[in-house]
Every structure is written in structure tokens, then in C-alpha cells.
Length: 203
Figure: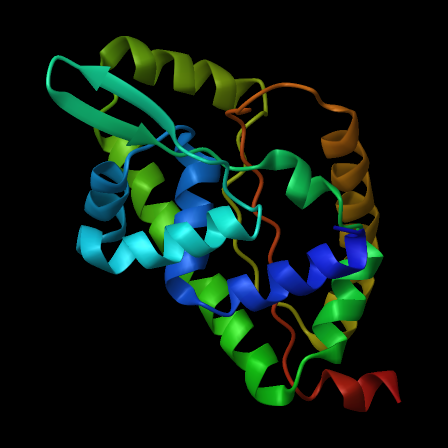
């Protein structure tokens, strides 16, 4: 499958909230069973089976690794990292712009709702940190490697900031291509939501 076809597959899959949640959870948590995913996403296993089967068929999720313990069979799913690295930022942008208004709206809504699932997972993980882990976290904060920031900007300030974020986004894409680490644990979520009257300033 070439990168343009892969971009279409990604766009179509990400319009489906359940598929997007599955992909996000697998990226965040690594190898997981349907039972584990259903607990995190907050839905039944039956709701996930069809979506996972389609993700496997589309090559976005790897075929399950089957483990047999006595008479108990477990299937572990992982993300197909290569499938996501095959689509460049420009190809992804081109694919988004080719979507209908309704499909683009559905995709953006699905993406934002899925981030809330990831944030919930992370919040629960932080909530379970013990005292030594919290001391380590303080040290990481002291060294400046944790970022907790939220800003609301004027149109002019947002335009200035967006040029910086585009550079950061390009750097992140290049680093992802070069990084061969399996299941990296550090996370950066880059989301910029412009007001719809931003175009008045740009024209």
C-alpha cells in the first residue's frame, strides 16, 4: 500500500471514534487484549471486536499474538508503527483537506474525544504513583522536562505562535522517523484550536 492509500485508510479509520480510541490506547499502553482495552475505553468487548478486525485488515493494527496458558487463550494486539510512519505530514494535510465538511468535522471531533481518553489514562497512572515515583517526578519537573501549559491567545499572537509550532511539528516528525525505540514512553500532545474569525486577520 503506497503512502497516499495509507493516508486514505488512516483518514477513514480515524472518523470512527471506536477505531481511533483503540489506536490511541495501543499507542499509549502498548500490547493489550480486547478485555484490557474495553476497560480503559469504557465499552463492551463485543463493541470492539469488529473495529479491531477492520484495523487489522487495514494494516493499522498487527495480527494478534496468541498466548496459551493452560486452557486459557489470550490475544494481544499491538499498533503497526510502520503504517503510521509511511504518511508524511504534508500527505496527511492533503488528505484532510480532501474530506467533505461532514467527514472532516467527524474526524476532528473523534480526535478530540479520544484525547480525553488518553488524558484519563494518564491521570489514573499519575494517581497511582507512590512516594518514590513522585520524588522522581519532582526532579523531572525541576530539570524542565515536563510541560503543563494552557493558553488562550489573540488572533495576532496565535498567528505568531503557529509558525513556531509548525517548526516544532516538523522536528517531531523527523525525530519519529529516526527513532527506532519500540513503544516509547514519553508523550507530547500538540493541539492548536484557532477561532473561526482568524481568517479575518489573515485576509
